Image 1 (cartoon, helix red, strand yellow):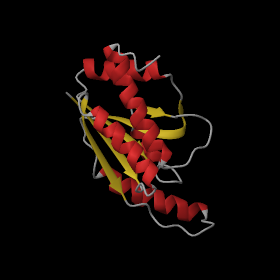
Image 2 (cartoon, helix red, strand yellow):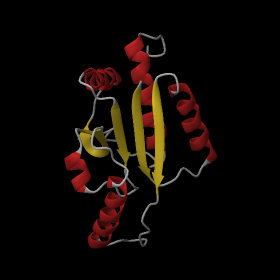
Image 3 (cartoon, rainbow, N blue to C red):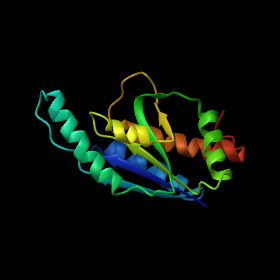
Image 4 (cartoon, one colour):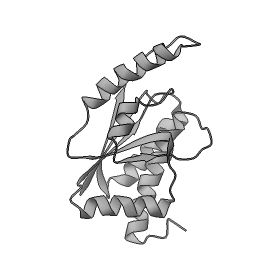
Length: 160
């Protein structure tokens, strides 16, 4: 069974996000060993300077690196990443599994993103959409897409 880690900067606060995330976590239990790690987001002033943002991203990256496995395929969630269909994501996850990739790690950065060094380290930079969504919705959307990928791979009717 594949191990899927989601490393997130920031905590889900709103009940509707936590309930939606919990539902997909429950559904994913039969497909993978899922682990979600929440790391604290660095505090920034209301109008941070580029230097303050860089410093915050650097500190968050250091914390993230402490949670990474060298054997996991790394996927950085970022707006400038590649967009792909649900079928393409499922196929990529299958390719990783077939090539011995028993671990996948998805990174969700803070509301100001991920440090460029983490993006450079990733096997895939993935974007959900060029549209802007609430930061915490990204986790729910990612969990749903991981679940959908497993459903596609098993030929379920979930994906229509």
